[in-house]
Length: 214
Ligand code: FES
Image 1 (tube, rainbow, N blue to C red):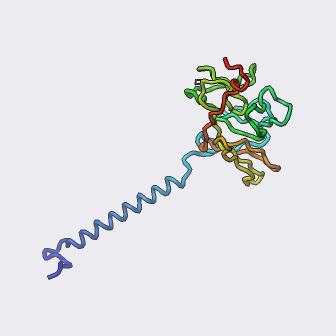
Image 2: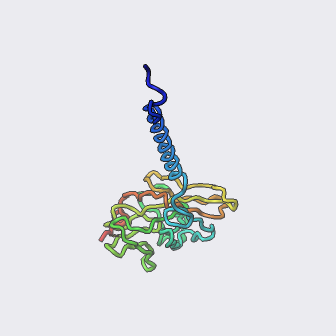
Image 3: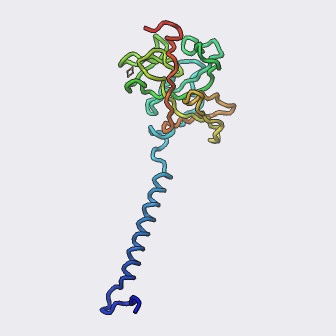
């Protein structure tokens, strides 16, 4: 005779037992999948927390080629670059191997690309300088002197309207880091995403281009 629906002693049949096991497995699987979806859907970092986004009023942006503005909570410097004007050329200039002008805002990660020290802006020399082993960087983060193996990293940056509409977002440039973002008309705020970072490129040292490396 086929398998009995009810055991002769009134306990659970083999079929019922397998059914309950299958049901429990499905419930566990569903719970795991729900947990995974929530894990990816819920932002892990809050606004204003390193790893998340920082929204800054548009007028916080320094004037073109002016000294960088420090955002310690976000671990970045905000710069406003324009190699087409004469103002601030001691800080920002077009190097010999740069064919296109560099124009726009950028958010530069505050960690040196050599061994991870926190570098600072040197007012006397008008460039970023690392106190650990002497790497130097131009206002936009490009290497001036080594031992840093590459230029400084950048975070993705977006221009927002007064209604929080995204007007423009920085995209990777041909060198692989985020390009400076020219801010469109109507930009009321700048949003920096410290969860989106691209490494700086290993371009020729500027001191090599000028034949004055130490
Ligand atoms: S960590 Fe900055 S130069 Fe070494």
